[in-house]
Length: 566
Image (tube, rainbow, N blue to C red; front, side, top):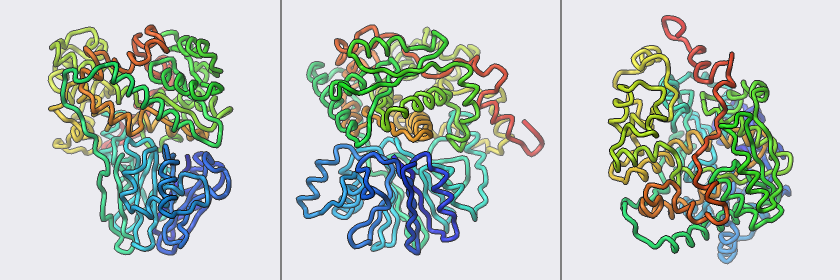
């Protein structure tokens, strides 16, 4: 895990840009200028800790250079394949796999690799820079482009500090989107002319012409639209367990200590169990809460005691929240309102004391179905029950007429079910930020909404393409990297995602039981009382704020309209 940065403007401050991301890579930094483009890198050493693993990494003829943030899974098989083709390796790093794979297959190398990555390739032969982001957006990749100047970075702060000749202007539509989503949906950012490269996309910038000549997807997920059962459950369980084992095994590979996060929930329990089978000495890291209704620690203790896993834990309380309250802006550089960032930061801090890499259970809710809103849409279409207990819980803060209004439309329901509702109405918000009445607040969901899919699959896919990269993965990347900890996500391996979405909805979630197949596969090892209990989130108690204002309220108070303060 590292920080990468680059640009085509010789006047920009690349040193300042890469230094502000020192937390992403405290083990060394390097800046390489090629006359028409500059690449910079700050290293967190994971594979091949020697100087041979340093970046930018160059081809033997110095015509191609690579900077890369992330990890390539199962790269040894690809390495052996390239060796057979005559390629020589100077290191044991996965960066050199990318370099030689690109030299062999060009852009098509990307379909041959799996992992979490943000890759930048400078190709002097073609006069281009090529960017690639992993399939689900585990690793961030920002870029700036104004028609002439082009630059990229692992974090928004890298671009802001690098582009010292640019006056950045806030994008009010992005702020408006934030107030609806609680994060800024991709590809937007807080600033105009700064964007996030979409997950599963590649981009090519022509250095001489100063134009983006390609921005396209290299991966599309095939989704099974059948609702009934199609395969024997025992066969599916065998295949699923084998895929999870393979993914965990691949992601445990490192030249530094590796641990796991264990919340006590379904996903992290399974990842921890599989990790312990492979490495009995692995340690796990957990975070509890002083409020019993938020605390899952007893389930984490139970699993760790059952398998004699060394567990490290902490308790998140009001005093800790007070200490880290103002860190949100430092971590995210733009409006972000997921308060589970605070305990995620603290458990990452605890893990960093003993490890450099941790495996997490993130992605399980999107890949196998785990959010209440997914079940709600299923119930809506299967049972036609808008007044059931689940809906009442989701909409406890809304009046009955508002519930009925949102319930009539999937996108309205989904946006509001996971959103903080501003005290100002939408008309006031649009006027304040200069948002056209024709502006579609649902655009972030609509572009990935496939009505013809079965109900739960439909929302799972929507979460995979929106909420997962926009919120969950962003949250974990920034808080873990703030303490120089690499987090890996076995549930988001390409093979696991494609396997799950190749199943019918009934095979994946029998009788509407979310994660039904996944739970069934681990009933004996994890225990039914852990797997089938009510889902608990990782958010902090609302009364922790007390006299302090929530991130949303802070933003509203800090923004100004033409006619005065909001």
